[in-house]
Image (tube, rainbow, N blue to C red):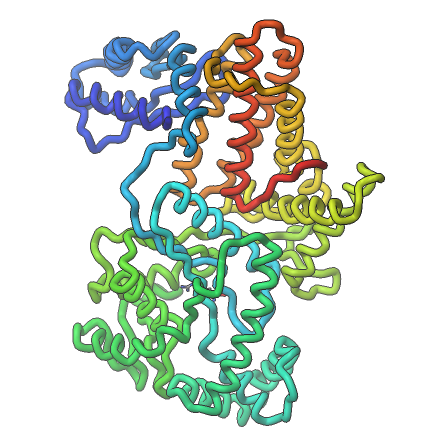
Length: 571
Ligand code: ARG
């Protein structure tokens, strides 16, 4: 049940009676401030010009129609034109029971769409670092959410396995006799230094990029070893992070190499690309440089090499024509906004993208250290993602050992893993992805506040409540019913699960799921403190409350699952 959507649909119909067009989506907000009001209809003031009524009068008319739906305990109108709705308990009861009985939380099935999600996408020949955390876990949540809603999800790990850095690495590896490619990172660093200072090295490296693009055997062999070894290391990170990416999802830059010459000639044929001082560029009116001149985007350099942009144009064409995407979402950091907009503009001009295919850039901010500078080691070095994850698990282990001195090592290990990884992921996901945030170990591992350990702990408590109460076979004959205001509040939040998921589906904003789970856990606590389960005499009340607890636990588990976080049995 998506209450918000249900109300919007009904209100839309009423709006029509007053000449307000179908295209206008009614604004219905869930109310968080006032306990007595569940939802509020906003935006009626905007219709002043469309109808003959004053906003207040119009709101009264609309509210009278709404009353006929018979779903309210109270509907009232507020100046200058707001409608406040309090739903009636019998209506809530009906829907909470439907939800309890349904495997899928009674979430309405939608038309399945093919959704391509570009996420993680690290550059090869470097180890994954803190900077990759956000693109990896934010994208993974969206992939899980879309899949849960029944969409056809195509994960794409657009690894940077092509381009200049390979020219540099191959040149370095050719010049020295390296026995194995174990420490690619340091080989790259040495080579990169040369690339900045040594003109002969630069020339060779640039040549090697072109040779690689032309499938030179020797270059390809070195390249393939480099790619394989980095992928192996990245997989370790994905596994530890509990991220759903596999090798099948890898389609790196190199894959599109075969399309690039065709793209260039097609762009030239369509008069989108032109020759300019030896290179091939696409002039774009929409984009201006710093001094206000129209910008041209280079798609092929004078030495024949293709660029990151060229690859992304080909990649977009592939996603539209071959993967048949209806919607493509990129999880790439803010700094690449302009790059993506240019790629989309060129691909749309060339008609590689259907007019109704949706392209979205779900950008995100940075992780900062407490001095508000980029998060690095004390010596100013980049932090390896694997090190960070291990550190979190280690910290979680210490806390759990301290709390449970008698717990056996195997159990501690498993719980520490789930708490440590959960804490890092949740701390990140609970922040609005658009903003930067300051990394803080103590906050993320705290049992208080909007943190993973708090939610995981709430889950273990609910489980023990359920266990304490023996379940009867005929529990199904006692429906969930609202007896107190605590139950009402809990029921309402539970019923808001679907509208929360739908927000994530629309905007890729996992922080809303975190807020939701935090709210749900809090409402459960209040309910549990104030409503007896174990000692209540009336069996129908007892069973209703047990069922409510079961449903709360199921939702927390599913919500955490969608965030890529595991629950634990004990803490
Ligand atoms: N490899 C790129 C980087 O590390 C991110 C790729 C994002 N995806 C894309 N289709 N461009 O910056």
